[in-house]
Amino acid sequence: MTAIVATERLTKRYGTTVTALDDVSIEIRRGEFAAIVGRSGSGKSTLMNILGCLDAPTSGSVAIGGRQVDYTDRSALVHLRRTAIGFVFQQFNLIPNLTAEENVEYPLLFNYRERGERTERARALLERVGLPERASHYPAELSGGEQQRVAIARALVHDPLIVLADEPTGNLDSKTSTDILELLRELNRDRQTTFVVVTHDRECESLFDRTIGMVDGRVVA
Amino acid sequence: MMAKWLEYARIAGRQALRKRARLLLTALGIAIGVAAVVGIVSLGEGIRCQSVAMIEEQSDLALIEVTAGLHGGTIVPITASKTASIASLPHVQASAPVVKAAFATRQQTYLGVVGGRWDEMVAVFDPVLHQGRGYRAGSADAVIGRDLADQLLRYEGIRPGDTFGVLVREYGESGLPEDREGDLAAVGILQERDDALDTAVLMDAATVTALAGERDTYDAVYVRVDSPENVFSVVEGIEGLGLNANGAFEEIESVNNLMDVVILVLSSFTGISLVVGALMIVNTMIISVFERMREIGITMAVGASQSDVVGLILLECLYIGIIGGLIGDLMGIGFAAIINTVGRSLILDRLGANFAGFAEADITLITPQILAAGMLIAVLLSLLAGIYPALKAARLNPVEAIRQM
Ligand SMILES: Nc1ncnc2c1ncn2[C@@H]1O[C@H](COP(=O)(O)OP(=O)(O)OP(=O)(O)O)[C@@H](O)[C@H]1O
Ligand SMILES: [Mg+2]
Image (tube, rainbow over all chains, first blue to last red):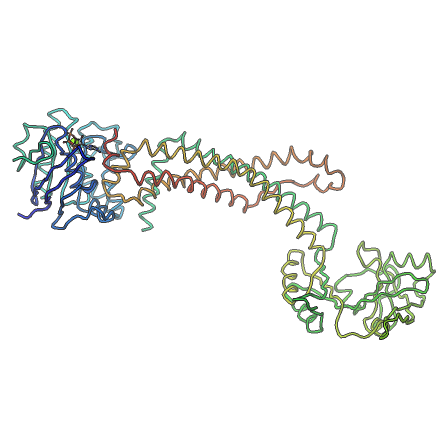
């Protein structure tokens, strides 16, 4: 299998004292369902943000889909976020005054698609994540788990190469967390979408193809 | 592309509607400024309109007197070909090229003589004869204005039908005055008209030049325009020929110029309230960007570029502007109505009976242009006010914005 994302000696420093990422070289293969685990402050979010083209490394390089990411080229970063990457954050992922369906469609607005196609994709994904009848509900009307399902549908709506989920279950109870992680796993199997999930759930580690451990900004085996 | 922006407009509309009271209050800030400007400008327009109406009523607007022009220090004379060009200008209903001369009676009563063709005079001035008849070509017939005729009768006993002697003062080659003499027959007297013809003597052009000297140009052309609205286009045509145009329309021009200045000054003073309204928008939008920081970060994470974010925020400002413009225009109409009822009696008190024309009419005038301008000001100002908050939003660091809770 080929690497869909590869980092090479990735380092991120804040000032001279904080090294959030230290010489990180990893490969995520196509279709992989990978977990990133590590203590708070170990650099998990920093890595996710750099992989997601939201943040730039201090040194080192990232290749997405076999191409080097140029972190100085703003429009190239926007293009990657539009086409190659899907994000799920820990909580409050959704735009409060848009309905579930509109939230799912939201990325397709910037990645412009016709309204008909948008609605169709959003409906299908809402159905897939088990919320077909909540399409017209606002985020405030949904439970935390339901909100995360909507966020997952949104992360998939533009068929990204890779979905980056930073503690998607961090604010959920353990039953709901397991449901969400299982849903992600199913989606990974069905759609062959690559997932990198930051998680604290030790119990669910068996769901993942691989677990990448982080300690103080370094990757440990 | 268009469809994409329509979608952006829809999303921005949802955002704007999220805090309705805030939206309304912000829009109201700009609306008050717009209303003040609309009200003041409508007062200016109303006064302009009334003044023009008064001029129109009191003078013959559709009459233009063309005189020789001045071009780069040389005189542009009224030649026969120029008179033909004038006659063929659009909206010119009739024209009368004339020569002018100054005669005196034996008792030194001054006679301002206008020589032209009677039929053309009739077509331009539509004179009504009080007594007698018009003059004939090639004759010494003279038609005399009413005031002058009264004077001649009173002091010199000249009556309609009388022939009377006149003196023409000419300056010969030596530069010394040479008086020539001639006789005129007073064949007709005009009815009083309240214009320059009341003190004029109308005659055949050939008779005038026989007495006052031959010339190959005219001294003036009187032009009758088909309707007062077209006067300015005819004036333009005349000025295009290098000639001068004079007439009552000049009063309108000067009223217009004056009112332009007055309106400009007044509206720039009231415009200060617009600045306050715009600052309110800046403030509101900065707050709203701050409140939505996380949302903006997520929007960027899912693929919005900086310009998408700027566009979304400016679209929200556009809504504020449109709502502000609408409310402002409506309030401006109300404001104008108040000025009209309260202000009219005040203005009438001050101006006195001369301006009785104002008593009936409205002193404010709302035109579609004023309302359109009010809307445009509101929209442009809102967009302008949105630039800073929009750039602030676009320059947010998405990582930090998303970390916000
Ligand atoms: N903007 C910043 N300025 C300075 N230090 C930062 C900044 N962002 C992150 N850091 C530091 O970088 C290190 C890694 O942070 P990061 O958020 O990646 O940790 P994490 O593994 O995601 O932790 P958590 O599990 O709590 O989310 C931390 O020590 C953090 O304090
Ligand atoms: Mg983190």
